[in-house]
Length: 174
Ligand code: GNR
Ligand code: NI
Image (cartoon, rainbow, N blue to C red; front, side, top):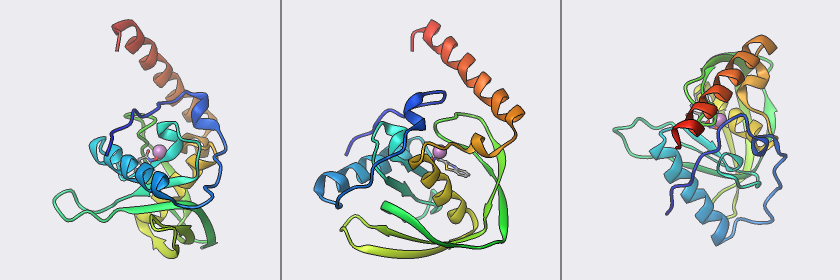
């Protein structure tokens, strides 16, 4: 497996519409494993392919506790089959927006259909943080990041901070 560099905002590569996979073959399954390794190291609870420069509709999530057994989910071509009218608010973060957090409101319950690592169609009902995380990752596949769901004032504040951080890092030479 391999750890991949994570792209941080602002970056045009985080704004692209990703392409469906034709099928989950060995190469796609390996991408899923590389994404999981990258996510665990970061550490994060989810990762979408465009965050590591892959413009395919692939995401991984794992909400298991750090000291427990891993419970990875690997999804290709995820689709929301149903979502509740009821909304839930979580404070979201993103590995592509380091150290930035904001409350985001999303459907509280979802039903999602996807292809797993064996190219088998799966359906999953999710609520709580898992529902939020899957929706956050699916947004990435459409070029959407969590600040696109908050006020323009807050969004501009966060993106301005990240732009400054990038300039400082460029000067420091890392
Ligand atoms: O690690 C992550 N934590 C998180 C917390 C609340 C809502 C969503 C997330 S996903 C994020 C990892 C990430 O950036 N995935 O794209
Ligand atoms: Ni994210």
